[in-house]
Image (cartoon, rainbow, N blue to C red; front, side, top):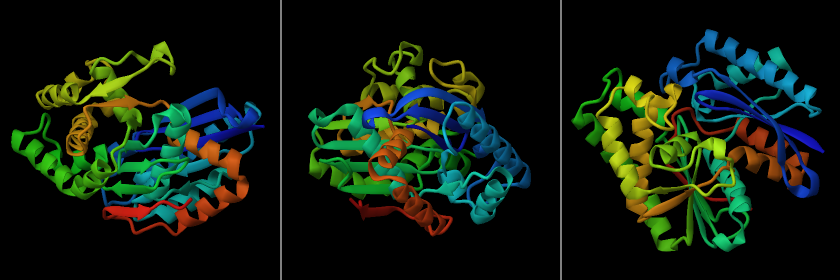
Length: 334
């Protein structure tokens, strides 16, 4: 069986085509289209028509690519940038009408659950009680669990692009008081979640997402060209020094640093602040940078639980919470 997953994020639309023999998704082709929605959409504002047209074009191209590689229509989802838009429903209808692909949004807690599943499969059972953190453009997901799926998840409005718009605006680099204000917000939002994870006492902590991957590279992790099986870790002290380095530089100069790409340079400081503050609050000295996350989680759930599961997820996404989310801590559904 060959399946495909399409992930519409804040910067990039990513397609993964994989063979699903023996219950393990093995990628055969990946592709991406850079839309940089985070640069075109401010938090709380609708996605403009031009950006929607670009999204339709990217989804259509991804669907054609999946078919060429022998997969059916992608399991397509959009994360917080689309989920939080006031015109979310219209965007989803326009994409479906223009491409035939039923794009849906995922509630933040479902994103956390799926990322946890992907990380659990990659890390294996020997990792024991597992904590996960994922920084997106619009939200920050945290999960903890001892089994296949997490025992609890949290979805917080602490995405790197969102915080960059809110706290830094056009100030590049930001003033020290702006950096302090952002860190205070993160501490306040994460306080209860961090206390819960400290109490649970995870044996292993992992981080996922492009933001964490780039920060790991900045802090000395091997580059992506070495492949996914090379061990990559991120140390809290190194990340703290990276925060100071990023805060002193404008975005154009950050993009020259190891691992920091030009499209994500502006939001790299906010992402580093969220990651470093979370690690300190939880008491994590080192985390593992995990290559499997939400896309692999989607494929695994589809393989293991069938098409009916995805249909239910799409329905929940259509009924998702209001555009401007508040911190959400809920028991994960098994």
